[in-house]
Image (cartoon, rainbow over all chains, first blue to last red; front, side, top):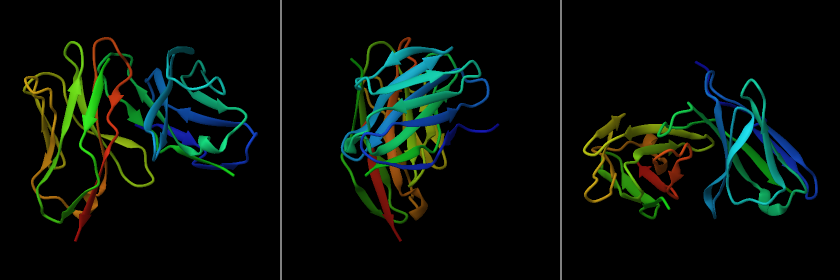
Length: 113
Length: 112
């Protein structure tokens, strides 16, 4: 069974640009979550999608948005990039049952110059 | 709300030493508890889990026991290897939440 796939693995952007990251969940997983990981703040929850609807949201500004398609694939968009957005962005998928573990992709390393 | 507290790192050990990484939690109800591991340049991988009190999760020589009386889920390994060097995250999922609560992670460095 293929794991969670994130593309691209690495990305370099400049301030003010926008970026879109992609995540394909494990087959059969309908819940997709996004996290931002930085050395200073650790792992922070961005949002979670299920059946094309945002079901949970973390405490991030509106520049961070996402969506989910009918095949459960998800994209995350960050607009007007800032230096502080440099981070590893992780996607995780899970079965739609509470108390289930999440399965993570290897992440997209975003660097802002 | 729910929270997870892990010991500060880095934890530095010599190969074949005994490992303990402490994890305590605060949650309503009866959460499921997890340990994840993150190797350099990779995402988090589920290492082990326990879903009810007194359950012991184990995998790859690592163990953790769900202690409800002390609200703890400490990670242990009897003999660490250099290849165990990674960051370890304790997490919980409670009630109807689909989103786990993660600790800040503990870096483990194992020297030959």
